[in-house]
Image 1 (spheres, rainbow, N blue to C red):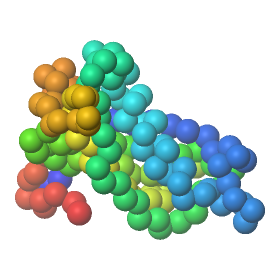
Image 2: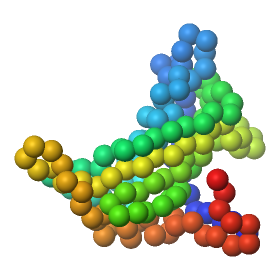
Image 3: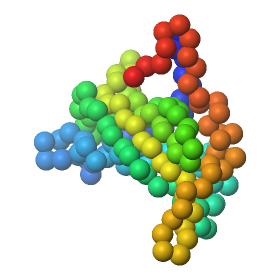
Image 4: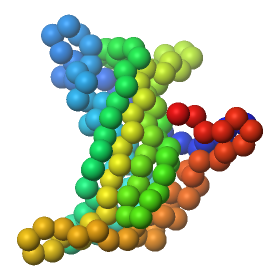
Length: 151
């Protein structure tokens, strides 16, 4: 059986996040990915957040979102973040977006990959994931059993 621990971030959709039709504009889903990720870092890896003020950076290298249903102003959305993979200096997280009204309803699924880099004169260079970040992510590693990982 597949089991997964998630870091959950809740947000009430505001009118400013909707378009003229009244549904949430797609770019807000990516904004919420960032809010969820940063909230996780503040709570579980505050040293990483502090390091971002120095020469350390986390650069988003890929991000996507698949939409299944619409959200509207006043909806409560819960973004559930889980670890997909750590490879070299990169972390890939999965984001499941649920409308929370009675039973939670999956409305979108996203993914984001960030790379750890150091700022150097003329650009950046890859650097290792901070140990504090690795330790914070460890409880969110995928657990695979009989059913295997979900896609």
